[in-house]
Image (spheres, rainbow, N blue to C red):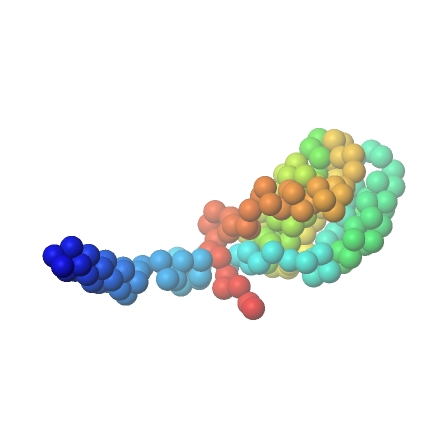
Length: 171
């Protein structure tokens, strides 16, 4: 009988601790824009579907027609290709992804298509949601669907860049 009283008392104490922890939870607003320093841009960290991603494909190499062929491949994968052109600077990497606060989730998805080898370049003052994909001299090909899915798993969820706050995700 004494053991049942002790176990019952421990259960009540544990229940009180759980209720107090839930009531005093300071992380309930985590991942939202509340508490964001004034003037910081809100980063759209929602992971996008390819059909919702707007991109400019730019050739950062001397290889003629590279941007056009990659743009065709990305169109066949349902991306919205807005512009195909040459970039002003030559790129040695596999690719460079330039994006602003509205393109964080889109750039995260695109990174998987380059097997996490694309260099992200965040431009805090950029106002549009388009991502510039600058192909570099180390680019060989886009990842397969299976490789993209594996890369997304390895990358995890998109995170707000330094100096920004995550925008509330729209459902």
